Image 1: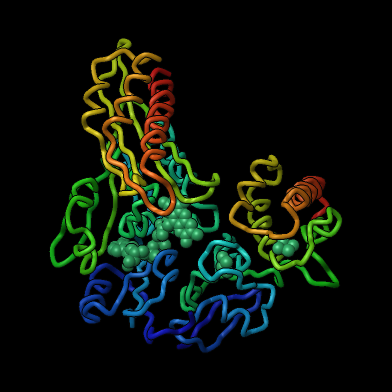
Image 2: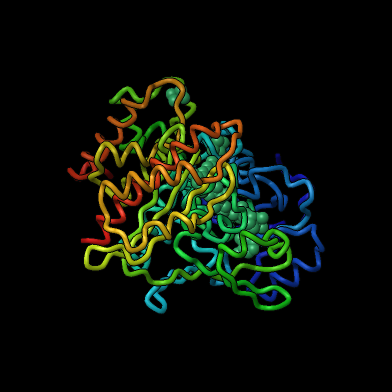
Length: 157
Length: 282
Ligand SMILES: Cc1cc2nc3c(=O)[nH]c(=O)nc-3n(C[C@H](O)[C@H](O)[C@H](O)COP(=O)(O)OP(=O)(O)OC[C@H]3O[C@@H](n4cnc5c(N)ncnc54)[C@H](O)[C@@H]3O)c2cc1C
Ligand code: FES
Ligand code: FES
């Protein structure tokens, strides 16, 4: 079936199977930041934004995004021009193997878009469904708090 | 788990269209709300998905002193709505925040939670305690307290009907929700929702429901009766905790044992009652 939606600010017109997972579709068209960790909604590695809200792309079929605005990590920053959240993750040392990182950055982005002065507990609640098997989470929380401070100081683009 | 046997995806414009598609598929079509539940498992039997999230059933509004929630409202929409925030001192906000984590709450709908009705789920326990009423459309219109639905063949009902909305009545008092899982964000090993109305230092009404026993949330009328007419306080809470331990119907499953559930149910009801009493007195 034909599908049209906005991906990272660019209009998309493409073919998808009615039962194709949104996660698979996004990877198929090159959005490799979207990871498949569990396929059951439990790990958060596949987190993306739809109309600005974080969702699990593994628990969606592609046609559900018809007419919607989809954002993946690729839409937030690039290697040459990283998003302040990505810079904060580097600065805080919040990345080890990196498998969870795209989902973590996206979920943190949603939090900070609605609350740029979160408490450490609010950060922990936001990322609670995103599993990291490497870092122990402490530095991820530090990174999100650092990015929040930068945002309040007007240092986001 | 891609593709499977799904060969059509429909976006229903209204309830009539959803119903006619459902009947055209004759058991091989499925209503899709948040999809959190439906798309988690293998969709062995499903050939057509019927998206019901674009039919205008996603409103949360004050009604008759209580609140009426459209079936396809997401848990986040409920959590953030002024009507839910004002309802019985924010009990809906407390309950929604107990369910899963933000990205799942952005997807999951109240209707999906009511119909999937996992025995360990948070919403069935809370909806039963709060006296929620469901309204649906199938061949005919239907309306019933959620409590009665759960005692009957609701799964059969919703194979050929669309849940439209859930209404919560006003309560002059306060409620509290308690849940324990292995972690703060895990599904419940036991959960409890309790409400109290207090006037002149005496309990006038009480609602007590316990879920994940491991069976689905149910009210405990005997416990409610034991609370009414009494004076809230430490002595009563201890008495009620013991009574819950003695009377609650609990069982074993792979997640927790009967004896632990019995104790924990008593503790959770006690905690919820203490907080409800504080809210009701304020
Ligand atoms: C990782 C994870 C963690 C979870 N944690 C919790 C938790 O902590 N607490 C908790 O209570 N729950 C939890 N859940 C369960 C979750 O809340 C429910 O699965 C969810 O509410 C289902 O809603 P949905 O809109 O996504 O339903 P869907 O998956 O869209 O639908 C579920 C079922 O209901 C039917 N249906 C949906 N809407 C209607 C309607 N309007 N009329 C008729 N039939 C309808 C569908 O056809 C389907 O059979 C968790 C789920 C996951 C995946
Ligand atoms: S892959 Fe989607 S939550 Fe794990
Ligand atoms: S850095 Fe390896 S899973 Fe998080």
